[in-house]
Length: 94
Image 1: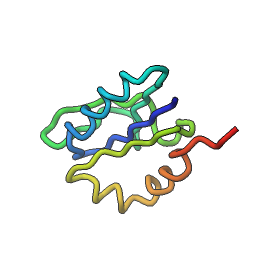
Image 2: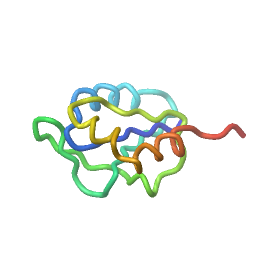
Image 3: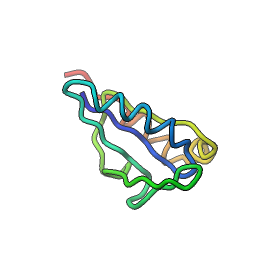
Image 4: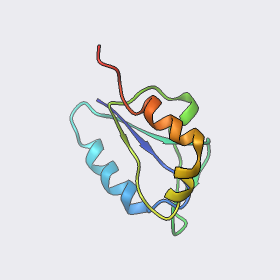
């Protein structure tokens, strides 16, 4: 199972790290941390995370997780990210 976790500036750290811990414990799951751009992403409070890949370089996922937080408003207004969710947020049936 391919799981993508979209991170973005000013997200709530616990909204990301709690589910990350659970997803990495699923047998056979491959978890990828995805961000709009390469480089560190600062969560609300300043803790920084380094993504595995960017939205432009990632395959479709079986599960696409988006945490919450004060920065979600900017995500909702970003047309590129809004296009990413439906285009990579599911793996077509084979």
